[in-house]
Image 1 (spheres, rainbow, N blue to C red):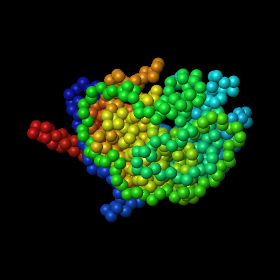
Image 2: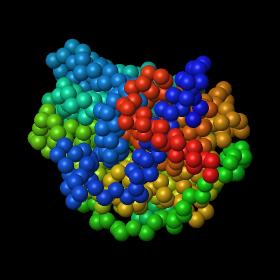
Image 3: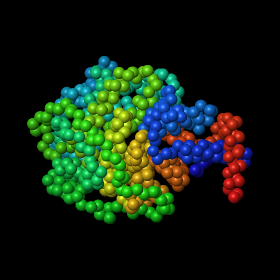
Image 4: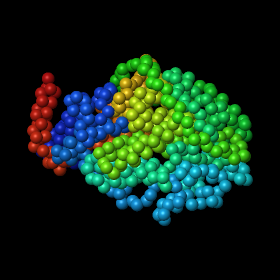
Length: 602
């Protein structure tokens, strides 16, 4: 990796080389011995018989072994992780000092709590008739219709960056983000420092949002991303749907939703001007027709990636028992005339980072602040939400989507099933949903078919791969017999091939990438973070070199470093860091340097 070492003396340069070499050796050892295809242990650490040791941890998105061993390395005096840890602690301290009760419920005693919703139902007749405990938000990218007197039905934003100011009326989405972030950072801070005040913050956030009768949220997102004039009140939930392991199961099965993604399938200007019936026919034809080759970008020539071991397109795995049908309480039907055109089923994006929330709660395992009663209540909420994901009209619509929204629906199911100790069902979702989704939507050349037809194709493609990476990490950290990172079809479809397709564009400032009008190409930090993850997963130095080319300075504060192999990326070593190394590490570095020199000479 490229480094900016401003030392003028040869002695200082030699010292930095020694320190960097040491960190690389630590990463190599961690990568070599901490990278199994499958993980059989549910907790880490364990004794020689495989039984969990006291205060062992169980996480699924983050590697419990890496997190534990990095804390041990940090305790020896190594300071490489201090900037990342300090960032986590500062964010946890902010959460600790925040007295806000984050909740979807309006009637709170605090003047600063939920001022957000005071006018939502009182002044706007189009706000749905809902329980105060229901999550509610307006879709920010759907705006008033300029060609109707009432502004209804709302339409997709016509220009990039246009948003609906009414979406600011409800702060449920903002409060949910705060709750997840506070729980996540406070739980990490508690694990790393052992300070009870951090566990208290995380436990309080969980209780207020999920447990306490006065403030808890109902376990559904029926009213999330509401669109005036298009959204409908919930209906009686349907039976659970578990798709068979076949690509055909990924095709859309909700005919009335054909015109829902018109902003993706047609130019936005046409969506405003054309007749709704004609628009629906055009959208249906665009959705059914194969994507023309001219719509797909052609990647610049790039160095060939190392061959990925291939497996059949859909691995043959034991079929887990079907998810039992759990009856859910019926909802009241929508009032007459509530919706006059095709319904909009919203988006379940509000809990796409549920994997962080669940791992944060898992890190509170040894804390008394989250009581057994609290844990039981949260588990009940999680199970109810999972049932809603699998049975509701919204959930069934989302799982049938072929773009990144379908990936994140899988992600939520897998996260919840692992947290609820149902790994067989989680494995079934990976095999029956995620693998067919991935191997049909990622082409042999790495193009992500469903994302490249969108105006914001780059961001959408990166979001798609991010979701697959999260699921991939879970398949390696949990007792799932399928490693998603190792899945590749005989014609080369894989997560890695998708990264390889995007990489040349990133390195050439988007040269040749199709852009929407008045839009410029930006690589974005999300793709750079993906390259770091790809280096950790595949060990390919080209990804690290690409990071050095795209990122001016190492992000030494990157929290991701805390649960990945030690010193894998974003390393900056100076004389102060070198001087902090314990003598035993200095000796080990010298020995390693000598051995390395002998190896190079031969």
